[in-house]
Amino acid sequence: MPDFYESFKVRAGSNVQLMKRMFIAERDRQYNITVDIEQLENRFQYLLSDNPACAGRFLCDDFKPNPHDDSNITRCKNEANEIKLKLQAIKDKISKHDDSLFSENTGKLKTGLSCHHRFNSDKRYYVTSSIEKDVDRLIEDLDKAFAKYRGAYHIGSKSKTSEARKRKEQRKKSKNRRLNASNNRRKRACIIFRSLGGEPVELCYEPDIYGIQQIDSVDEETLLLFTSKTDKACLRDLFDSHCFMGEAEKQVHDFCFT
Image (tube, helix red, strand yellow):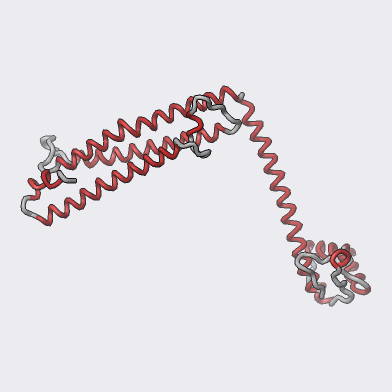
């Protein structure tokens, strides 16, 4: 900002504190706007890259659509539109500030504010003539890529693929639910087995497989604590795995199966 002093000294006169305060305020304003524009430029350049999540590969002349490219193209276009909206917000902010530099009565630039006005004009022109045009061009290219996708895949293909994927995900979720339910039931059975005097190893309680000692005596009061449907189902699992013997086996059988 070397021209700030030349333009603003007419307004500040010999007031050094005013000059210093206004310099800091304008320096910060210009810095923040410049950084905001640079960040959007970097974001835009990343969007143009060949990263699988970006739009670069859709812009090649030899681009050949894949079945799920439509969602990726749409996402990249949404990203480009978001960048465009933020650029417009910066331009609006600059324009609002620039309007405040002019006198409402005469419409002329106020004394000592030529540095402010020059920065506003330069940045507004740069955004409009450079990055904003590049973003518009990208949006047009993505529209062409989407048209190429629609030409390669008939209208019903996406829905069929989506339905197949949905069924696959539902089967996977159902399998996971069954596994979780089985693990939770086995955990509960181990808790009951331990409460009745058994000694499970991790989630294992089968004497025939792991050599765990069978229970030959069960406390009746403890057994009566497990009256819920889930607990009785776990007791039946323990019974079927031969975790009980002798009198304990008869007690558990009568409790669970009668």
